[in-house]
Length: 342
Image 1 (cartoon, rainbow, N blue to C red):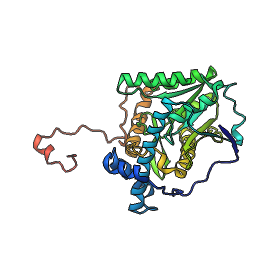
Image 2 (image 1 turned 180 degrees about the horizontal axis):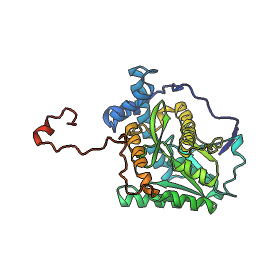
Image 3 (image 1 turned 30 degrees about the vertical axis):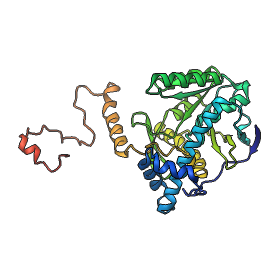
Image 4 (image 1 turned 90 degrees about the vertical axis):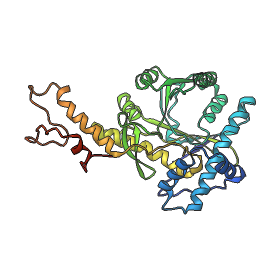
C-alpha cells in the first residue's frame, strides 16, 4: 500500500459534481433490468443536482451508481476467495499524522462512500499491528444468520462490532480503554436521536451522538473516508481532525459540530458522486417533526425540574389564559370539519 501525505481536503464545488462518469454496459443494464430503489436514487439525485445537471445527466449518474454497486459486490466476492488482490493507497492529511490510535483511542467519522465495507478490512490486512483497535457501530441485520456471518467476518479481520442499541455508552467505554470507534454519519436519524443540519444543500436529520461524545471526551474526530479511483485502486484517507465547537448553548454547539462533520463528508461525496449510497432515503425526516419534538421537550421540562406547585402547565403554542375545554362534537361535525386531516 502506498502512503501519501496530503496538505488539505478537496474543496466544495457548490454542490456541483466534479464529473458524471461513464456508467458502462454494466451500469446501463443494471439500471434497466435490476432497478433496486431506482425511484429513490433518481429522486435523491434530482433534489441534490437537479439545478446543475439535466435529466439525461441525472440518469447517467444513476446508472454509474448501479455500476459502482455491482463493482462493490464483485470486489467483495473476489476478495473472499483471494484476499490481498485489492490495490490500496493510504492518504493522510498533515494534521492527522499526530494522531496515533495505537497510543490512545480515537473517534472516527465515516460514510457510505466507495467500497466502505471492504476497503477498511483490506487496510487492516496491510497493517496487522492495528488489528483489534478499531470498532464500528452497526445495526443488526434482519436475518440472524447473515448478521452472525458479518460479525464473524469483521472479527476475523480484527474489527469489533458495537450494536447500535446502547452504542453511546459502549463507545465511550471503548475509547476510554484505548480503542477507536467509527461512526457512520450519513444516514437518516429519527428526531429523537438527530439534529438538523445542511447536507448536500438540504436539511437533513443527522445523528447527534458523535458530537456529544466528542464534547464529553474532549477529543477531536478524525474523518476516515474511502473511494475507488479510475484505475481501480481504493484510497483510504485520514482527513484533518475536527474539534468540537464550544458554545454556551449546548444544543447549538451540537448542531454546529455535526454540521462540520457533514461538510467534510459532502466534499468527498461531490468528488465521487456515483460512489455514495444514493439508495438510502437520507432526507425523509421533516423539519416540523424536529420542531414538535423540541416543543414537547420544553413542555415536559418544568415537570422534570420539579417546577410548579400543581399549577397547570401550558402546552406548546398555548398562551396564558387561553386554556379551555372544547365542547364535544358529534360524529357529523367531526367528519365535516375542514381542518381535520383526511
